[in-house]
Image (cartoon, rainbow, N blue to C red; front, side, top):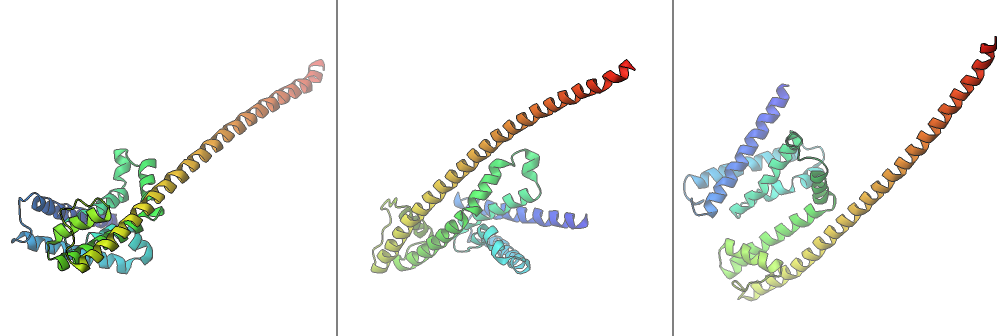
Amino acid sequence: MAKNKLIFMYHLIVVLLILSSVTLVLFSFFHKISMIDFPYNDINNGILLLFVIDYCVRLFTAQDKKHFLIENAFDLLGLIPMHPLFVIFRLARIVRILRYHHIFVVLGIDGKFTGSIHQFIYSTGVIYLFSISVVILVLSALLYSMVEKISLSNALWWAITTATTVGYGDIYPRTFVGKIIASILMIGGIGFIGLLTSTITDFFTVTKEHEGTDEADLKKLIVTIDELSRKVDHLSDQVNHLNKQSNKPDRKK
């Protein structure tokens, strides 16, 4: 009982820290505060430090390190300090905490739908694809910002529009190294979109096949139950008939 209370308090503190960090970023995004000013910068760095320590402790104590890295990939992305918007990935931790305490079950929104989402993210390898893509975007944006001498925010915007092959043209490379980075990012973006499309198609195809198989199995089961019911009724009639036949001599006596 005491252990459950400690786990609940720990999760509650984590949720409050996540919501606090996300709130700071949103206020900064809408220019209500400045993340480089005191005390917001110190608060943000303090929360980041706590999450880094928490992640390292959980990784060190995890029995299956590989499984931990897969399940907590979004947590790792949320620790990227190069841009405040990466704290949005910490919200995935709240979803896992809610699932841990069966909050979705209480609210009546857990079941086949949430299970399908979890299966799509982790079983199909989308989490790997997404994590690698984010790392490539961040590294490309960081290098591009240094080479082209622009802000990291603009570099991230450029990286996203380039990788998705949108290319608005408001930001474009002027240096030779910048053009090389752009070329690599465009090729990677095309590959990412192709892999994502293939993964989504395969997932829905397999899911539909499983649903069709389940429906066919259900129909077979219903037919089998009907046949068994008819046989039971037939056996019951035979037993009743035998009982009547066996009782006739007794009546004569």
